[in-house]
Length: 273
Image (spheres, rainbow, N blue to C red):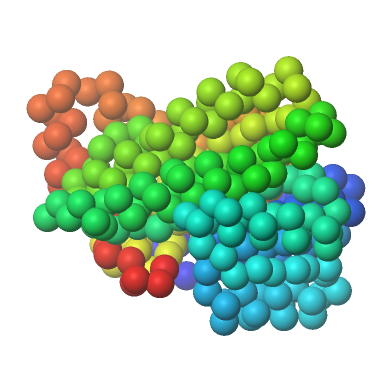
């Protein structure tokens, strides 16, 4: 597809994923859905937590058609007690969680600034991830094994116009996971942070698609799964986007602001995205 960068073909390991219990939030669409499909095809037992029942059922049907073992629960990650209950049910059905991928996230524009919309982004992207991780972590610590991966974004590196809440949420998640890694590492639990660049979803603009730098959700998901296999602590990709963000961060403020103001803005995602 024009304006699309699928990235290099990345194969995940059936040996690593086969038989593992993998729980994914936001697994009914986008990167989360593609991660479920890939891990399920590699023999993992998949537990999906997401809000939209219709999308959950469609993803479940697609996975089961391939012979994968999959269970789903409709739940809002912002609801901590409900999320803990969902994790308990899925672990009862699929076995103790081996890999947890916190992929649920939303985008809302932050200009003009709307406190309610901004707080919703923080609630889902940060508090939702914390709720999920806190639900799976005690069991992993007790077993002294397990792997947690949080999906943040290269948007954590620099503030982008119209995206104050989104960038802040991803920066917060990066710092949270980095600190958690220091605590969990000696206790046998791996923590990974995945920071993709712009992935082709309904929230990107046609101008961004025309740059040819977008990844497909499938390519992003397989990159993340491969990083988990390798025990990577952080992965920022595509590399050229990460380097551009790091370069922007190092520029004088006036120059950086001038460059960033000229970038295409992410579109307002639909309310149910």
